[in-house]
Amino acid sequence: MSIFARAPYKSEVSNFIDDLKAERPTLEAEQRAGRALLWDRSIDRDAQAAWRKARVPQQPYVYYQVQRQER
Image 1: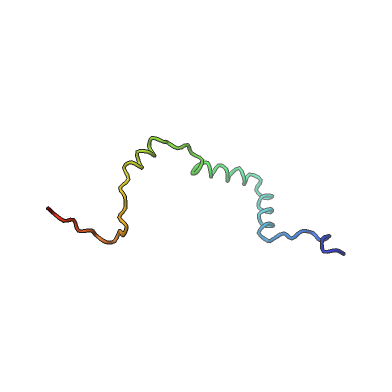
Image 2: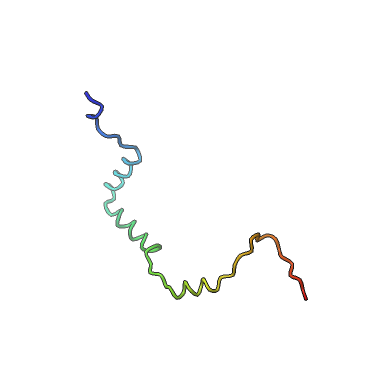
């Protein structure tokens, strides 16, 4: 018997996922709905531009307080 005639290897994780999908056929739809709640959103370009404009640049070393010289 040739080594190529054997069944392809399937890991325990792949078996677990296949079993889970068989038990819960709506799993992929639930995952898509959950992703849509957090990630699939349109971007408000005006709000993003205002946020970038209002951002204060961070100092190179944040824990060191720079003493301002008074004139």
